[in-house]
View: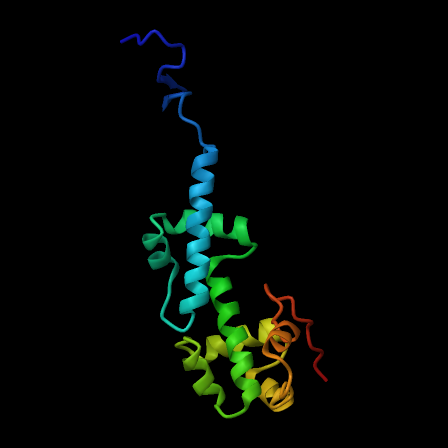
Length: 167
């Protein structure tokens, strides 16, 4: 069957190939994906304390989990799960500074279901355990405007906290 086009599908190296199909997204598709990615990020920011996973976020954004993860990292510099955990740790830092909740209560309040995972991620981002942070920073921000305290205490992402030396 000849379609009259030199770009018709053909068997190349034993595989079907159509030169009309491109793996590069169009500008329209890229903008549509970016809009969906922003919606996912906004949802994480709003619902960080709820059980969220990449598969559900992807399904609701009409993307595959792999595509969501790749494009989210490309757009925002980190994977969706890492972004979610950073939001949770930021909120945990605020609650720990208040000093009226235990570390376990804070863990569950911010949406973590495992105290071990919470403590590990907290330590990676902040450079100290949640218990140490609570002792060191309780009531430290009293009287400071919320906007300033959020900026000053924002955790470092992607395990960039300085390594502590063991003595």
